[in-house]
Picture: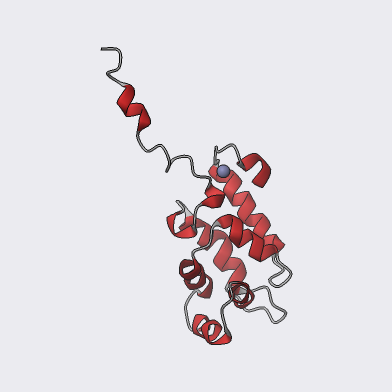
Amino acid sequence: MEVLFFSTETQNPSTQTKCIWLQDVKNLEGFEHLLTSVLKLNLDPKRPLGGDYASLAGAFGKDMTYVWFLGSKDSPTEVLLRDCNPTLVYLNKLLSSKEVGRSDVAGLISEWVKKQRCNCPKCGSLC
Ligand SMILES: [Zn+2]
């Protein structure tokens, strides 16, 4: 009789505990919100000195043909990120790189992640 309720405690052992930073964007709950409130806003507009979606595409190893293709889309940033499907920690690394130079956007992503209240033990050091 005493083992009756044990089975319900072990449901979904792995999916719940995965850190927000380590989830790829396609599976990230709330990514749509992050896209519209942070990413499109900061990366879609062309910047003559770099730091826009084209610089980010370059950091992902994409060539100019692909960048021109992105330029024909409503939101180049959204197409790029759904295509490359990075984790947030990797995206932040690229945004902070010399090539892209958008540590301001990386900071906004960190703020966003904090608000999601990821309760994993690693977040203390990453956020
Ligand atoms: Zn976490």
